Length: 494
Image 1: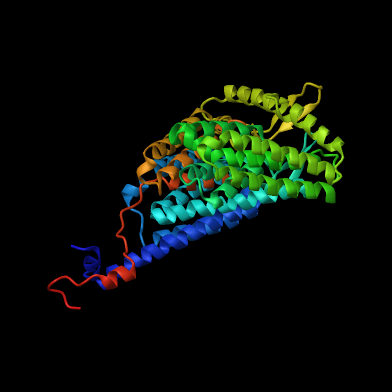
Image 2 (image 1 turned 90 degrees about the vertical axis):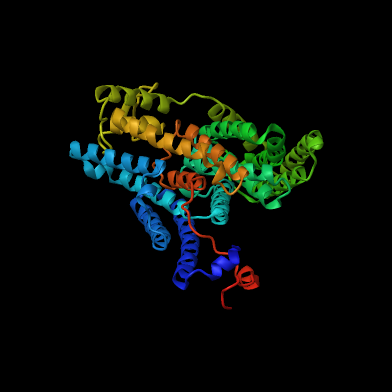
């Protein structure tokens, strides 16, 4: 039976329900994007006020998704949803056992938010999932632009000085977390670009996200990007990956060169550095577009063009009157502070955390602010105090012990299984590759920073994973034009 004729035979109440489910899916997608946007704008949702706004949008998205299509028991038993629920329940029980259940509320709410995101994504069709990815890329692009502007004009807290350099903290107000948001989204954009190399929009978005990520000067972000690019190369092929990344990376390098005069903490923003940064940004975006238009055999020519533009940017800096001192200082500071693996605070906090875990290996020390304060003596003899370990896996083990670590491994395993089997559910093969690269990059970054404490990052990761989840079975609605043009089946009245 033809789709249109079967649709004509559908009862009016069922027809209304099908259309309602589609409208609910679209509304849920928009509300989910609103939750991510609100989290990004409100310092990642780190503080209670921001978390409240994010939670309100998530609840609204969940209601919009579930009202036309309520969840089934089978859906609630799906891997990631069940694993997140078990993690939340286990954490709460451990909190109750030690008489500190209130300290586990933020974690339970976050895991509940991850479940909500996954339930919403289950109800999105391929088109809605593609629009969700586009919306996430738009949020990331805005965040990248905010961080870049913060560095150029030294606008705190969009940029903050650290180790003598201004770093793009963005709307999250934490440079490393900003990188944890931008790098995965950049990998999604690059994967989509590998499949659509002539897309100007994807070229500009990918380049902008890489510029924003570069302005954070995050070493963990760079490590995650390299691992993600390696996976992208394996899954998409070396030739396609090279064509996709050559332009955006070359453009990002040019744009970063324009930031050198304003990177030092001692530099003074002014007309000349601003003009240089804007010129380098325009040159970088233009170079990315130019390289994307070239055939694969012209990669050598593209590299030469990039070198020429870099020289032009350097000449532009001199012509604009930027003194060489900030530039040389920036190069020296970046080389000494960011291009190394040393981190005294990370090493000291890790050592203290491991000692505390040894004292309470099964259930951890709890999530209370007093329980996880880390104190040690630095190399210069000063007392060092830190609230979090710069390693989310270690932080969970510190707070919840081996039980919490096991629950986390189950959740991560369920998400990994979803990604592995998610190619058939993704809007496209490129989207599947991009999400896989994004999540592996975030997994690497999580071993070096406390980024899960900003809800927008795990919720964004959940939305990316949700794009690959198996959708619930629901009837599709053919376009009205197709319905009208379909002749009625014999035996039916018009």
